[in-house]
Image (cartoon, rainbow, N blue to C red; front, side, top):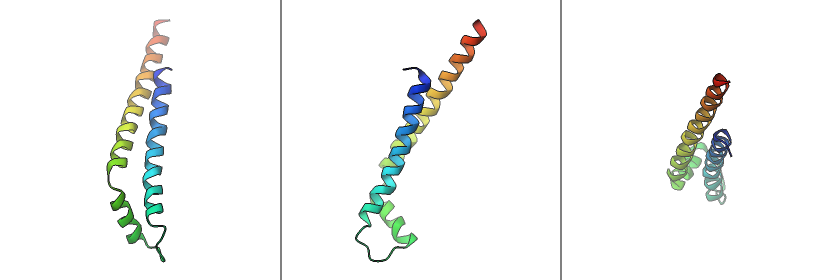
Length: 80
């Protein structure tokens, strides 16, 4: 797999981790009788920052690999 493919996979992982954060908060709050924004923010605080941190790291890695792959392609086309 080339660098652009690896970068795309890391971006996909970042999106899945962010979705998992909100899904976990929604599951945690599933037994609540009434919903509000403040209550959902409390649910997000209960989930904590590890998923956000992992998603941020995966996103940064994905962008780095994508840019690296594009730079390699540009350099290869200049040599021809």
